[in-house]
Image (cartoon, rainbow, N blue to C red):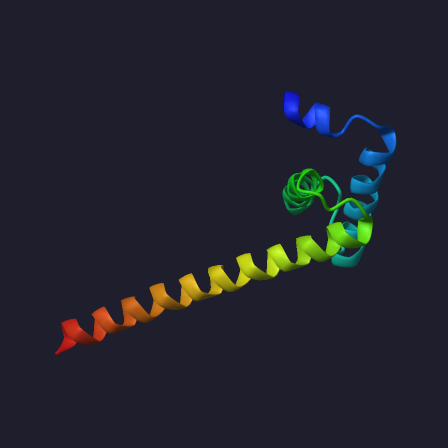
Length: 93
């Protein structure tokens, strides 16, 4: 937590993250108090610490991150379903 406080020490720094989160919530019709918004806020702070210092850069990086996670989740779900189907067919034979 100390590193976070050192990295985000100015009001303007927090404002850019807040603005990015507000826009993210508006675009996705999510409440700022929702679990998804909390996850997005955490990711935005991580991205800010990694050097994404404008609202546009933060949102673009978050979108890339979310897309990659979504693709991984879909691939995992598909693999699990395909494996279960294959096991079901194998046990019937």
